[in-house]
Length: 316
Image (cartoon, rainbow, N blue to C red):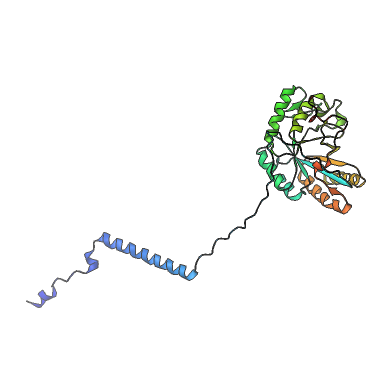
């Protein structure tokens, strides 16, 4: 055999040259995957175990038990007589603005009451939020006063032009919207000097409505000298304009405090709250203890109308 023949002797094929092209590609892919897994394990070992997620503390929120407005409840006990300089305030407009509602619930003392409209969306949840913050809530009944051209009360209203059955049906609808309220307001929006006819609460047509309200243990908020005949009237003789400028609001609030300091019965309502009005009101309320004036919950300022039979005990 010549040297040339030995040099051309066929070589034994190796593993790499024996695999088809697809097999070599698959082998390379798994090699890369294994290297990545090994690298990730090494990195995790270097960094150590991940931190445990923070556990939020459990916060107990006290709920206020409240009866449904759909069925009668036992009347609330009359509050103890108030002695010394006291005043109370009911702020209107809760729920109209999410931002102002949040501000009011955070900045105003729990003794401040709120007046809410039956047309507010998700009203039960709003009332519940106010309860959690310790506030009393009153429902602003849509009552047509003696000046129908001055106000628009919307659907499900009570008052002039209705019969007794219509008023009771409207009252039921409104109360169903607002479970857990302390009372209702039938105060006329128009100031007394502008109208000549009496408000709805001062007419005989109000008596069936008053009986239905009394059967649910609710109070009635009225203007000044209006009288509902209930044993738990709340009569507010002033209305604070919260859309005025800061100087005017401060002056009006100072006048209220001065009246209370001199022994007058002071229960005031407001029109719809505004940013300026809330700011000035919160500052004024914080100054009352320095003047020896106690801020009372509105329900503590009830004044029974002893001159008129209580419709809750008078079946007529």
